[in-house]
Length: 404
Image (cartoon, rainbow, N blue to C red; front, side):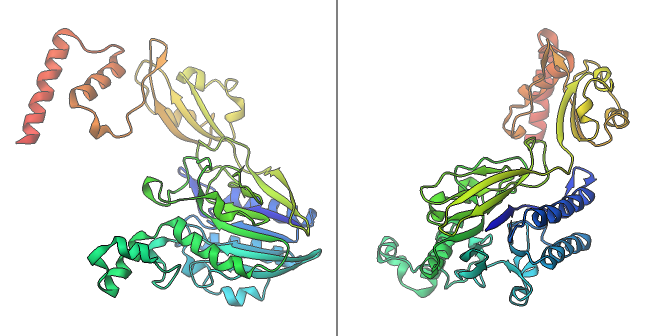
């Protein structure tokens, strides 16, 4: 059977101040035509259907109409909610939608089920694993704590409330996802299986546009969770990529359109030919619609030369202006040449090199160092002699005033 795997449509998103509504509509049109022509039996959308919890009405309409057109040609659709979606809103009528050919899952309500799918070449087990926030898991969800866990807590294990609080505090994205997979595995009955999940699998390559699931790496899950499924269709990371696993195939399809300047890679969907014995062949198919992203750099004279960056004229542009002199109204001046310039950075060249980028946390930089860095950026040399003495006096007086 042939399956089309896509994810992270983020309907309703903008690129900077530019709405992506028309680009997303063009993608949906292309996608419907493509899966029809390729005779796909199943479409998989692995989360982040919308860009925010309360999606714009036009985005809801676009998703509904796209699914309607797919179902009209007898193509079945599987979709899960991601961390950008509101599970209780998107999947509120999942039981009724099952009858239409759209299998839509979100939240914890039906976690652990295995959905039998009758393909043209035999049965397929579907396991749908939407984004599961660990802090909203039902209190009775998952494996019971082991006696060793309770023993480690000592006297704290003297009440049901304490045990419940400990259980909640131990939950991570990996633990709830592992519990969900553990519920499903015993129910697999056919010789092949397809898991659909929205997660940050360790080893995957990030872009700048994903919303972190949790801080400090606690949102990552191990790829071994999906070992044994014939194919695992992942969503969340925006770059198309395989994640190595011992048994089966685990893959991110990536976004169909770029959503940040870090996404300068070709955009695609994934087509899977899944044999009856569970073996699969994977093809990455480029998406021919949408605007590419471009990072360009030069003086205003260079940037305004139409022949300098011809490929950037119709794409989203991040322009770095390197003029030594002060440049005003840079974006307004660039718009006639680059109608979709989204971001303009002023970074004068100092001795032929671009000025150093700002530190990640400006509050960690000593005040005099910050002032000296600004002076170097503006004047081309570090302050010395009387200038440095004057700046030092001013900075010290300012610090004293703040402390008082």
